[in-house]
Length: 73
Figure 1 (cartoon, rainbow, N blue to C red):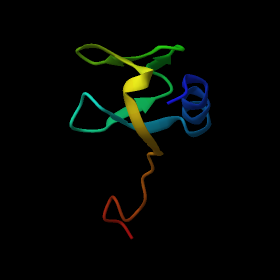
Figure 2: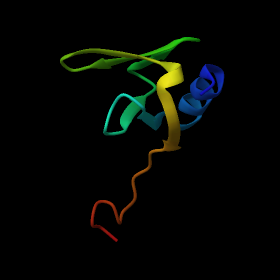
Figure 3: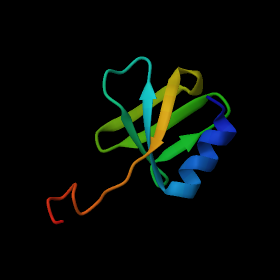
Figure 4: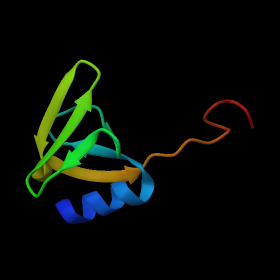
């Protein structure tokens, strides 16, 4: 994945889901707690810091919420 595209997508949407090859579950990235350099992604968590290589990201998608997601439709 290209770091420039990843940063632009996160800035546009404010949050982003990322499939990272070394993790079984997708990682939720937020604009306020994620730093993306040309080589790494650093995520500030409530109990520590998670850092992984940009090259380990195998896919991203916009994370959205709807009334249906909350059972309010």
